[in-house]
Image 1 (cartoon, rainbow, N blue to C red):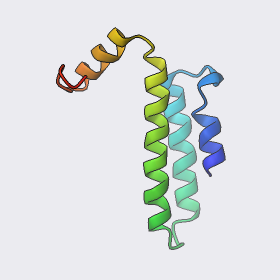
Image 2 (image 1 turned 120 degrees about the horizontal axis):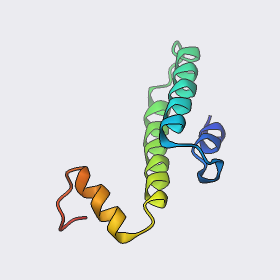
Image 3 (image 1 turned 135 degrees about the vertical axis):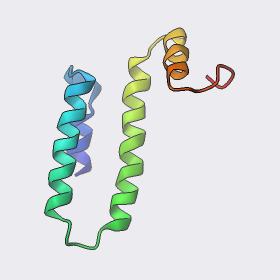
Length: 83
């Protein structure tokens, strides 16, 4: 699963964020529905943490300049002093 998510969140694939989001949603929904009867709560918690960190990496790499990072963090209601 992680290798496929790595492939979908690769920075070099040239996808827009909306296409990336849709592909990830489709893959994860299918994976969860296939394994929903299995005992996998802890696995999903760990995978979710890793997945969120991976998405943060993608966005952080897109915001190359300091001004862009500060502006986008401000849009997310993060105080300017922390941004």
